[in-house]
Image (cartoon, rainbow, N blue to C red; front, side, top):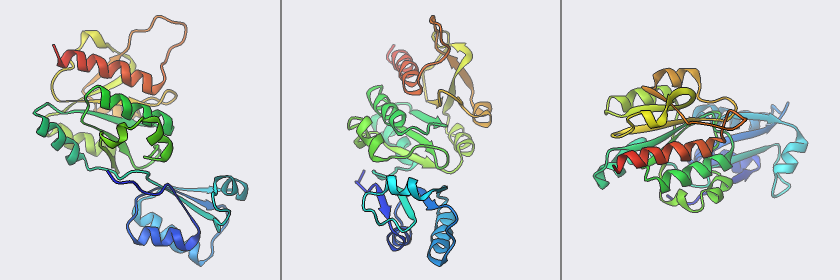
Length: 246
């Protein structure tokens, strides 16, 4: 996976980035700015499916590394994304049943990076994230992954539900992390499997959860009722790994 710049600032630079096909995760535009160049940038963003956030000048100034943002900053992927087929191919080349992560509502890049690190160490073949309302492969995610981002492919898809439906046709079972699910030790988690993880606050979205085949709960004995998303991903991933090696 090749390295790409993280932030792109200025109207011409952002417009050229779109026209050259760069992968942009999110676009920040000065609220109320509607002149010609900004309109062109917004049009390119809509064509690419880039989420747009309208922010204050103070916010843009804080984000800017050059001081010359001209009312627009694009957050580009720090690393290139893979395709879902690349992940399945990696499993096939290793002669292993696919083991995937699918992330829903994970907006913190540090959580994303930690999950990519866990996925790599637990032997997963790749991670799938949505295009919208999700952290991307930013520099912060790359740093937190401790290098795992170089070895574990991450695919970004437009629609998680449609992706689940397509992967089910290939024989992959989906297990959703949910505190109201079946105790993970009482489940059969072997074979082709995709672990679905949501955020600590929102969890997995309803439509995605409904498409999953199983829900797995982590036994808890303490006084609070939830784990950080990356910690929950690690606990469940290693139960999957334990069962796959039995």
